[in-house]
Image (cartoon, one colour):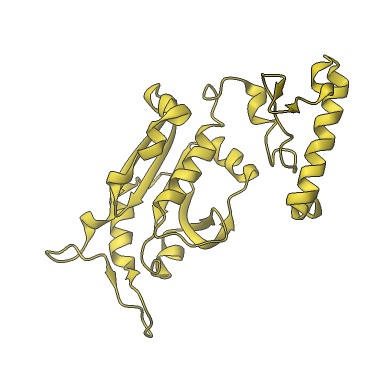
Length: 227
């Protein structure tokens, strides 16, 4: 079973949206599992402190390496070989290719940072890989962890209704997805493109490929440069 273990200061945020829709149904059916670990359980002193001021000065607070290290050590078995992903704005970008690779394994360990981040020493000491869901900053890693889980869980066998759904999507072929239409045929003066109503599968396939290329060229030309 694919399993996500999430280290967070706010375990009550989970499963959140992951308990609904496709991921929630898959969770209830036992296709995947999720467990949370409260980092603050290993905090220091009677107030369970988890952070301290940055060495060298500066704003904000930093999660301590000793606290996070103790939490990871207590929450994971020594032989757990799942990727340990630290949600971080400076991490490598989560891509569809990476999501598919993660979904093909045993699961993930997700570490949710807060404040200014975590003590750098924990990254090397516990073999963490930094990963980012986009070029922006969030208040913490919890929402990003949900994104990683959702991107992976929907790719697990038995989660999506049609197998083709997951291979005809944006980014799967290095392009954004083609436009979709459904009934009614005409709506507010706008009609479904005639080619989609012909039943000619070769023409429909060619139209969709051309539209995917057009949309990618207009909106994400960087994807074309990568290929």
